[in-house]
Length: 157
Image: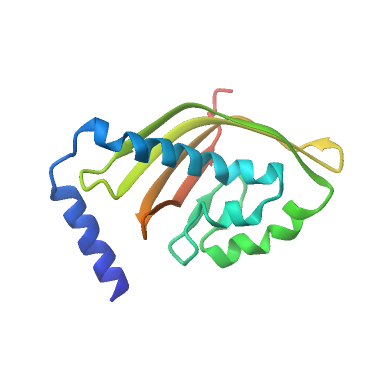
């Protein structure tokens, strides 16, 4: 039933007229903060910030350049020991060329940016530079969360 309701809401989302761009400005700022927090939480190893930035259910999906696809929130938690290890160290991150586009209903948006995610693991570089990052955010209970994200590298680099 929940899936049916979600599909119905997304269908409604497509058919409603677009709101004026200036009405989205506060949401745009909040989405940029949330998207940045998906990476930036690692600076202080603030799991509450990270968990508050992503969908905490089976709808969450994250596709990375590696072989593993994280398909739900429970899978995210399986990676926590690695990230919380003192061997993993955040250095910095930067979102370049961030673009946010709203669906007509205003409750769903998608984003694109180029990501520098600079870290070390056991003293060795463990970084993504110039990674392409796309994703979908949804407003749930009044707050934006990342529901889907995909990271890739251009083949010509």
